[in-house]
Structure formats: structure tokens, C-alpha cells
Amino acid sequence: MLSLDPPSDKKDLSFAPLSSTTSTSTTNTEEEGSGTYKERKWIVNESNLMQLFTRCPQCGQTVIDTKKFSFGSLLRVSWECINGHEGSWNSCNETRGMADNNLLVAASTLFTGATYVDIADWAACLNVQIPQKTTFYAIQSSYLIPVVDVFYKEQQAKLLEDLRLQNVLQKGANLSGDGRSDSPGFSAKYCTYSMMDDVNKNVVHFELVQVTEATSSVAMEPVAFKRCVDFLLDSGLKVDVITTDRSPSIRKTMRVDYPRIQHEFDIWHGSSKKCCQLQKKKENQDLQPWIKSICNHLWYACLLTEKWKSLLHHICGVHRWTEDGRRKECDHDDLSPDQQRRKRWLKKESPSFRTLSMLVLNPSLLKDLRQMVYHSVLLKYCRKNLHFHYSSMAARTQLAVIDHNENVNREQATTSSGKYTA
Ligand SMILES: [Zn+2]
Ligand SMILES: [Zn+2]
Image (cartoon, rainbow, N blue to C red):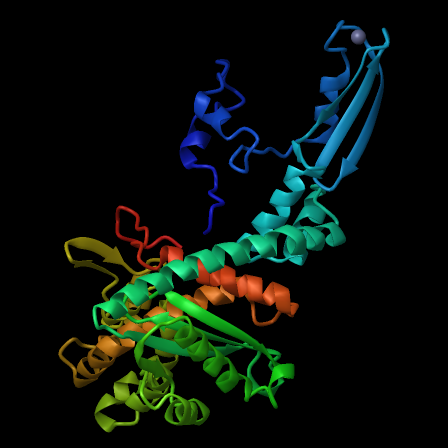
């Protein structure tokens, strides 16, 4: 995500355990991050820290007075020795009057999709000092949201420029649109409508509409959709095809407002329904006990198309297999011989398995899973059960788009055994 890299494992390995008698010297790489967000930070107990302030660094005499001042994550210790020397020490740098670590606490919270409440509970439990709620939100609105906005707009400008270049080659853009309400049903407060470029799978634009801007919460989607299309057309983009779900209001908007753009329908929205219909045919009856698991798996698989496809091995009772020369395995724990025996695995040559294979490997569905991947990222930054103010919601959606676009064409990390990392 963005630019907050966690410290690499390599560095941890170089750390000598307490029992070791050899002293570890600080390597240059550890100093490189000094003063930046990359610098390592430690949880230090206050009593241990204060042990450093017993002797004067100038004359070595006893320190007779120490004063502690704190603001959020910043701790300042000022001291005075028996000979009248004075000094003060800060636990982190300050930039234009703000403790860097207060900014970093707020940034790493927002940039990882967490909320203040999440980290405040964690910090209170451990008694780690972090900024107060008001400071946190002041930092968020004064610094973080504007920075996210700038980054999002730069990324979008570049993506649109690339698409316009394709236009010059007589190729109009093919886009897929999908809307999301923050809560299901009629009480939704926001609708986020996003447009994805079908070729590179980048999200090229989104519109966030509040319920106050539409006649009802269901009416938000066509409003957001139309704003998306208008924005893209106004930015000089030539669009050939837009794929959406079969929502009647979107169909009408396409027909009335954009008759020159070809309108296609995606398969995703019908797929879970199709799963349930599969079992209705008599010849597919042995699928029946599996339907619920398949629907769950479809959702889980939005993390990765590969995971979705692995279903075809698991359902036949095969949990380790080789694909494209790489060893793959299911994510679940090993089944006991008893569990393996009792499950009603499908036979590879059965009609049920053939029907299921056709559904699982359907190229249009696999394409739609890409949209799902984006929606799962969106969920990370904008959890549906939480209420956000408009500016936070917009920034969080921008973060999800940035995150998705930065990672969409990157290979998913795998371990040597081919198991996907989370
Ligand atoms: Zn002194
Ligand atoms: Zn399995």
C-alpha cells in the first residue's frame, strides 16, 4: 500500500537476542531511515527511558531535576544537573511545530484503512501514547486528506492520458462500471460508483454521491454513474463500450444519454444466482450440499482468481496439485483421514463436475472477479458498518483506488510452495 513499507524481515534477523554476549553494531542501513517514516521505532517503557537522564552528559554529575512534557506520541524530557547545566531531549523530530510521530501515527492509520477507534483501543490497552482524537482528525483533514487527493489526481491524470493515447490509435476505451452502497437496502448514505478500464484493470474514476444529492438512496446510483461517464467524456476520453449490471436505471441512462456508447452487461451479478440454480437440475443433485460453500468461496475468492479456480480441485477431494509447473495447495488445514472420507467429494468425470467447471472457468466471470478484487480493497478502506464524513469517505475511496491501481498488475506474492500470502 502506498509508501508505508513495514521494516523488512532482514533487519529483524540481524537483531541479537538478549542472551547473546556479542554486541551488535548498528549497520548503515539502519541509519538510512533516520528522521524519515522508514526509521525503526521502539516501544520503550518510561521508567527504562528515564534511566538515561540520571547523569549530566556535559559534566557527568548527578541530574537533580527532570521535567516531562508530552503531546500525543511526542515525549520531551528536560533536565538540570547539580552544576547548573540544562538540556532537553525529544523522542522524535518536529517539523514546523508538529511532532513527526503524531503525523505518522495518523497517516499509518488512515493509509492502512484503519480508524482512530481501532488504534485508540489498541493503544489504550497497551498504554502507548498516541495523539488525542481532536489532534488526529485535525492532522487528517489538514494534511492527510489533501495529500491523498493530490496523489489520486496525479495517478488519475496519468491513467487518462494513457487512455487518450490509445484513443489516438483509433481505439475507444472499454470500461466496466459498478456501484456500491455503504449499507444495503434503502438506508444507504453514500453510493460509490467506479469505472474500471477493461484492458489494464485500473480504476480510472469514481464518484461519491450522498443521499442528500438524490431523491432516494436507490436513486444515488444512476446519479453517480452519470457523473462518472460525464467526467470521463469531459476529460476528452473516447469511450466505445461500457459494461454494467442490468439495473434498469443505468440501462435507461445509457439509452437516453449515451446512445453512441455500446452498453454491455456483466456476468458477475448473475453468477451467484446461477450457482444456486445449478442444483435445481436433477442430474446436478449431488451439488446440493455444496452450494452454500461454493457461494462463500466465490466471495472469498474475490481476493484472487486463482483461488476461485482452486475450487475445482478441492471439491474432488484434492488439496495439493500442480498448475503451470507450480505446486499449489488449499488454504485450509490438513483434513483428517476421517474428514477426508466423510466429505461427499465430486467425481471428475461426473456431469456435476463438468457443469461446475464450465461455470468456474467461464472467461467473463474470471474477468468480473477483477472488479471483485477492487471491491474487496474498497471494503478494507471503507468498511460498510462504519459511518464516515464525506471528506473521509472520499479520501478513503481515493486510497482504495490508489492501492488497487498500484497493485493490480503486480503478481500476487506466493511462498515457495505456491501458497498465497494474505
Ligand atoms: Zn552538568
Ligand atoms: Zn481442499
